[in-house]
Image: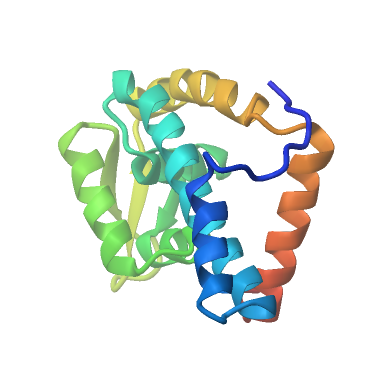
Length: 170
């Protein structure tokens, strides 16, 4: 549901925080930066809550969904845990924790690497494939309607991509 651009009002806590920053003498770039950081953090909370709500019936968190979706996209349905953590941009310990939870649920299994005895693969099970396909249909409802017009969504991605690139994220 796209909304018409609205100006901040007295009901917006972030706009009020900006005014406090300015009143304290921290205007200009500092107030802009505070407002941007606070807005992104709040948007993250809103988006994550919507995603988690859609995934709850499937017993998945967003991080476990992402891992299952990544594995389902791969040619053989399996990746080394280290490669999965790199692609998901999370610490290997976070990926290992998610793998453990998915193994317990029967959605993935650990397998020895066929040519490198030091490496463990994480492989999606048939049950994992079925679940992630159903969960993807549900989560695509959120992705299709962020509450932004399509051009706003693209502009947001472009701005965040610039920030990520300028901070060495890729």
